[in-house]
Image 1 (spheres, rainbow, N blue to C red):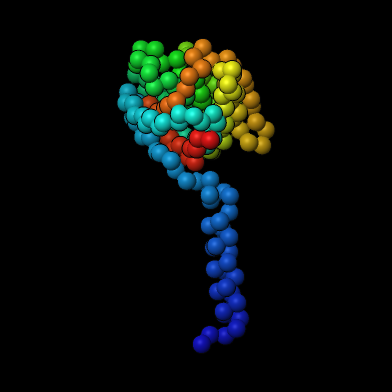
Image 2 (image 1 turned 135 degrees about the vertical axis):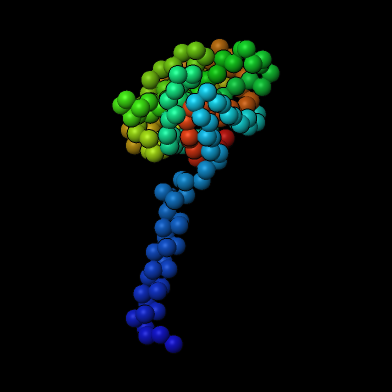
Length: 179
């Protein structure tokens, strides 16, 4: 049987580990999917979000494999499952990794147009929120403490599929949820 001081120290250490495991920062690290695709490669996941109007989560770009073939990107887009591959008309958040200077730029993507929103360093997760109202207006929020917010009109308001993708990068999609 150990001393009372030893048992108290053990209880404090155990309590500290429990608090750390339950803290919001640790809870935010649940990886929904990790996409690793060398430059010139592409990978994606489709998730049904029929009837959902809000998508939340975080993106953490670990590294960019910048090359001559493709840019280093990660995307969270909302799409119509009935579309053909030639008519993506994607709408959502795109992260682009650069090496000179080392940075990750986050934009709102609407079809072929990208509107700048925020900039971070690699290994710095950023929170996002995408919402679509009944009239087809999409609002994208990037960042939590000082969020950047943009609202755009969707040309095709029907959106029932969440599309996660990456090319030329190593990226974690964290806590992706549809509400």
